Image (cartoon, rainbow, N blue to C red):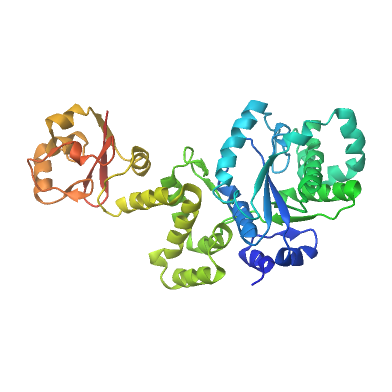
Length: 423
């Protein structure tokens, strides 16, 4: 299958500005760019599809440019917003760019062949003075056309909101980006979300006027779940690519919990698996849904790309804990993530040096109501230390029983867990 057809089949293309793109992507090397708004120090899973598209295009022989919006980030894109953005300082933006730069390196090759490059639009936007900008750029834009753009019109029509001149000027700045990238790097393609259509068209039009060159644009569809809700949102908020904001275990669990109705389309837009491999997984969803094989593959592929093989293996081991596997060699963060809703107590490490009676531990954690009940439970094989049955009523917990540097896990029955935190 040719590259453009594959991208379409995967559901990664919403609109294109020209049918010529089909042949260009299938035959030549195209330099393309994607802009990233550095309003935070991490991307989230809402960016995953466009990052995967960049990855597929680079593997297909095309050259990616990641544009950090150091200049435009100080202004704010009105698209997809119902209110004015908070303006960030230059220092905040620089710090955010460093975080995003590291995450992009997990998806793109910056070292060999058609290697990706990263630029900051502050480099050229900061050199404009107001008079030159109005004379050289502003004269090419019709206010009537700008007002007609959905991103602007929606804000103007929203009662009591409106839009500032600062954000109104955003599309001019992004148009300058496309024109400048064409001039400096022979970049001829911009890719963005469906809400970026107006900005992309503005850049194409400006470059045609200034340089008499033809540029192109692709927009991607908004990724939604089968129930119509936006992908990437959970009850606790966004799912981030940063391990500090969303742990690898939570990240893995997020993809593992996707529904049968969504998992195949997500495999297409979020992974590098071939369409033939995905078709086989679709059969598994249809014939053996209880195995959740497609969800496991989705979670593995996405977690490996973002967090690496070691973090993936830890996340899988942590997930298996809930199915009764022995708990050992996990870190504190993973234990905390797995058992965040479990009743817990705090103890001093010294209790382990002295020998902490399992019977006392079961009573103190309220897993058992009395020492007599605890003894009977242990003798019947119903008491577990780190998911390992312990039948010795004289058993004392020591440092050897730690599941992680600071935690010890008790279980009674199939899923009645208790957490002991040592400090």
